[in-house]
Length: 130
Image (cartoon, rainbow, N blue to C red; front, side, top):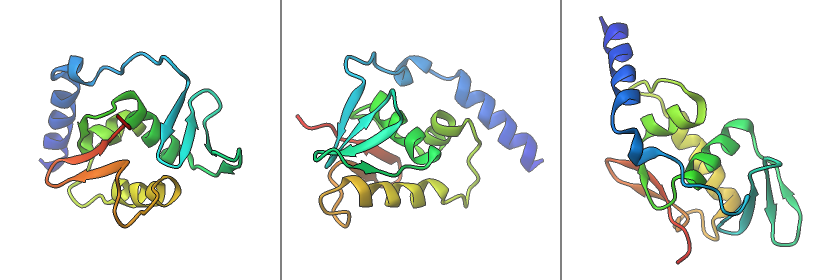
């Protein structure tokens, strides 16, 4: 029964209001993310001095999802769909762990995130510099 509910929930998520999650067109294939630049073409994260910060595939996929949906709150469920087309389990903390690792790479102060913020009870938001 639990598996059936999860499948139905997954189907409903994919069919609901896709327009609000449509990626914005990329004007620039490099996106500023805190202390680093994400190169969407090469799948690499670079510091201002040109050095490369190592990224896992999931970390890149998450950063790409945030870059495609700036200044929008994305739930864990949406992030799993956008980053790995995977269902969210109630106790799945993999997104939280990866966000923590990403923050260590891009935030000036990972303990007080300003680039990828937590929206309590909702998810995460990538805040672009205004």
